[in-house]
Image (cartoon, rainbow, N blue to C red; front, side, top):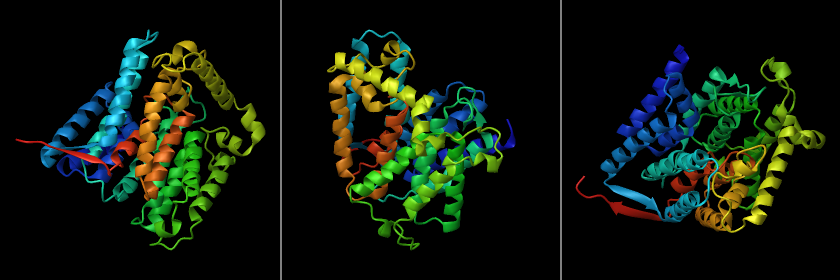
Length: 403
C-alpha cells in the first residue's frame, strides 16, 4: 500500500465522518457514486467484505440522520418499488433455481447499493438541489483511476480499478461528467480541467456503452423540448450548442488512435472506432455477442411471457453469459410481463414528476440507458439513486417520537 492509496482512503473517511456530523445531499451523493473506489480501497486494506461494510456504513448513516431529523421521509413511488421487490423475492422463492446464490445476490446487491442509499439520501433536503460539491469531489474518483488503474486480464487493453469491470468505472465517470457540465458555480478553468481528465479516464476504460448512453440522454431530453441551454449556461454566457460541440469533438478524439500520441502501452487499439465505422461494428465480437444474447432472451420470453423463468435463471439457459446485458430483456425474461409492467409503471410515473429540471432528467435517462447496454439486475443500480432521491414532489413524512 502506497501513500496515494492511504491519502484517498483518509479522504473518503473524512467525507463520511463529515456527512455523519453534518448530513449534506451533494456530499452523500458523491460518496455513493464513488462506491467502486470505496470497494477498491477496502480491498487494498485486506478486507474481503466490501458489500457488508457498505451496508454497515449505510445503517449508521440512516440512524444518525433520523435521530437528527426525528422523522422518516418516504417517497410514495417507493411503495410501487417495494411491490416490485416483493414480487422479485416471491419469484425467486417460487421457481426452481439452478444457481441459487446468483439470483439471491442480484436482489441483495440491488437493495444494498441502490435502494438503501436512495432512501438515506432522500432523508436530506433535496428541494434546493445543488451538486457543486459532488462535481468538485469527482476529481478524487478521476485521479484515482488514472493513478491506480490497471489492465485486467479479463478485459485486455482496458484500464479499470483492480479486479473491477471497466464499464462500471466508466458509468460513474460519465455521470460525473454530466454533473460537472451543469455546475454553474465551478470556476471555468477548473471545469475544463475536470472535463479533460474525465474524458481521458473514460478513454482508458475503453467503454463505449456509457459514452453512447450519455450522448443519447442529452439528445433525447433535447427532443423532448425541455433542454434550455441558454438558462443553464447563463452565468458564463456560452452558446447553446456548446454541449453538443464538446461531446462531438471529444467523441471524435477518443475514436481515433490517440494512444499513439499518448504513447500508452496498455491500449493497443481504440474500441471507440466502431462507433463511427459500420463495417467495424458488424465485425466486432462484443457487438455480435450482445445480439446473440438478445436473441436468446427473446426466445425464452416467447415461451415464458407472463411470469418469466425465475430471477437469475437466464444463466442456466444461456450458453455464453449469466444475463442478456439489457435490463428490459432481463426483467421480461426472468420476471415476466407482470414484473416488467410493475417496473415500467414506477419508471414512467417518476419521469413525469421531474417536470422542468433538465439536470435530473439527463441523469435519470443517462443512468437508465446504461442498463440497456450492459450489466444485470443487481449491478444496474445507478438509476435507482436518481429515481428515489430526486423524486421530491410526493413525500410521506413519518414523525419519530421519543428520540
